[in-house]
Figure 1 (cartoon, one colour):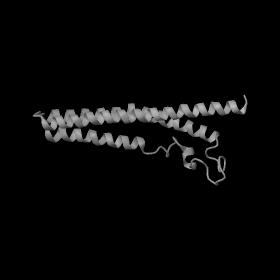
Figure 2 (tube, helix red, strand yellow):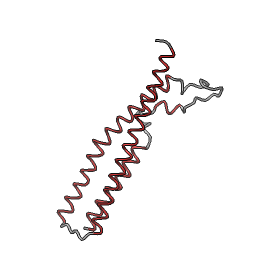
Figure 3 (cartoon, helix red, strand yellow):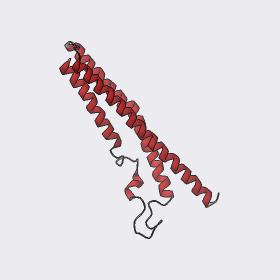
Figure 4 (tube, helix red, strand yellow):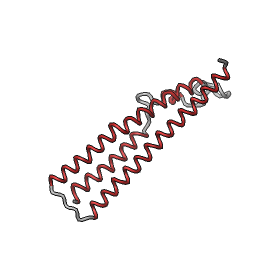
Length: 153
């Protein structure tokens, strides 16, 4: 296999990994927005309706909501996060093979095209804040629903 063929394969792999990362990101955003919308709509409905739960029902419903949150986070989003980080690790390896992290590889400057920190993309400690921020936003939505159930029903 000649160098041009290897380069073509790397570029194709780079495009595929980029597409995968964007697909996972979009899926997380879409699902998060839907969940958040349903949580806030449920909170609004409980707040404005005349639904009255007794103490046991409130506690049971609040626990159920928290269990749903934990299951979604631990299984659905954790799986997406793992796939996302694996795609980013592979992407960083491909970018490294293409010379994106080498100084003066593409230009005369002493800097690489990509920051050196990106070379560790997807590895422990370099995950970024995308998933953490999504988790926090959803936690607020679930918290509002639990708060509404306990205080306004």
